[in-house]
Structure formats: C-alpha cells, structure tokens
Image 1: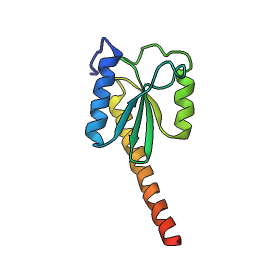
Image 2 (image 1 turned 60 degrees about the vertical axis):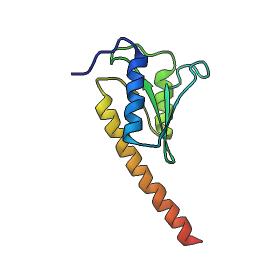
Image 3 (image 1 turned 180 degrees about the vertical axis):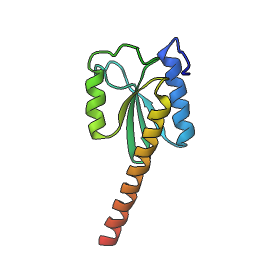
Image 4 (image 1 turned 90 degrees about the horizontal axis):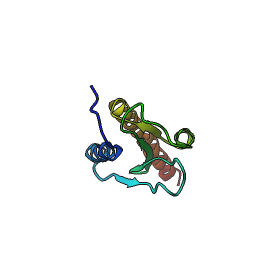
Amino acid sequence: MARKYKLESAFQHEVIQELKRRWPGCVVMKNATGMKDGFPDLTVYIGRIWAMLECKRCKSAPHRPNQDWWVEHLDKMGFARFIYPENRRSIMKDLERYVQRNMRRWIFHTIDRRTAA
C-alpha cells in the first residue's frame, strides 16, 4: 500500500532522493512555480536525457490549471509524467526504460557520426 503524505514537498523530497540513488550524477532541478503556470515541479537531467515530473501527494490531489496540458505537451517532446505514491514504482520503471532506450540511440548516433567522418 502506498504511503500517505500530508505535504507534497515531503513526497517530492523522496522522489528526488530516489532519482539520485538510481542515477548517480543526475541533475535534478526544482522549477520555479511562478514562471509558467502549471509547469512540472522537477526537471531531471540524466546524461543527455531529460525528464519532467509533476509530484502530487496522492492520486486524488487536484491538478492546477495547465498542468495536464504541460505534462502532455512535454511528454511529446521527451518524458513527462504525474508522479504520486500510488504510481511511483511504475513511473520510475517507465523512466528507466526511457533512459535506456534513448541512451542507446544517442550512443549509436554518436558512433555513426564518428565513422561517417
């Protein structure tokens, strides 16, 4: 059963710690809430791969205006998800698959460019 959080910030802190454990050396940035209304909470840089995560304290937590739009829009460009205790494991697995798939593409693209020169 998923753990209950009184505050989103407590869950967000645990997500950041898990990201840093899974991908040592990754950069996790907390996005400024006032810049773009509804923009996701976290940007994660893992090598040349980026992901956006919008943390919620529980599955039923309300979404702010534009959050759904931003997550959908950014997911078309890369990886973006709502993450909350009830889906945390599956989102981390999805992110892991996304990173592995895109790292392979980047490595092969780099090798192809070097051999073509």
